[in-house]
Picture 1 (tube, rainbow, N blue to C red):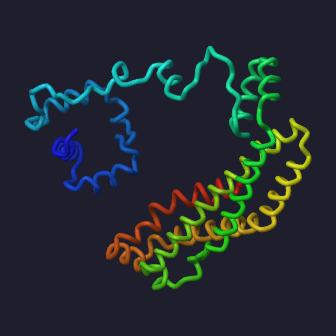
Picture 2 (cartoon, rainbow, N blue to C red):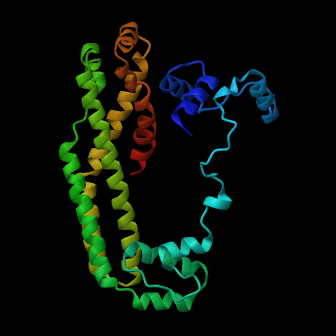
Picture 3 (tube, rainbow, N blue to C red):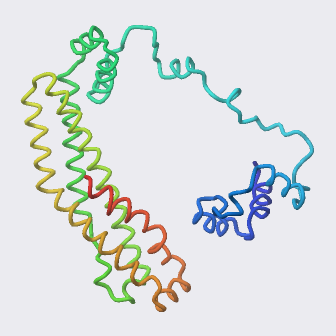
Length: 285
């Protein structure tokens, strides 16, 4: 779809000339009609009749387009094409993984399918020692990354700021930087936990107490050095969320937002982060 057609469609379905404004307005109702008694009774035929009645469709060409038709019969890969693309032959012998994560996934699937002979085969053929060494090295690197993020993280408690400080774009930049660092911290924490749980399960299946001890040491290091930071992050995010919600409709705040649209981030983009990271993800990592 070319830009001119896109702009015309945007203007037809919205009251706003600026497509960015139109998207922002629609985002509140997830790009759909608001659900009311009237819209609940609408059908696709009603929409088609409305378009035929009111649309100035001069921008639609009567000449058949040479653009490809994006339908599944011509665009979608077949099952065999997918297998060929990733180099897998489902009817051939089982290929032995070379890393702990893939080995765990394959072992669970074979177990669930009751394929004990195949399970025994990959258990014997799997290069466990080298794969576990690489796996634990990756956990160590994740912990190093978390330590670096801990040093980088600068928590900003906005409830301790004056309105003048809070509504300063430089402060907003610091707050946004805090959120980016917290996102990286949570992401790396989830990854480390995932690697620990999978690695520990595989090490037990090979009765490898040495690997279990190394991974437990990494976990203990995480609990002592990173876990307290995550708890502190949760407190700051919760307090920030409640404070910003309490001042959103104060005149000086509303006027500042009118004069500098960047400050809307405090009440728009940030909210989703607070709810998902501060109250859901962070509390579970």
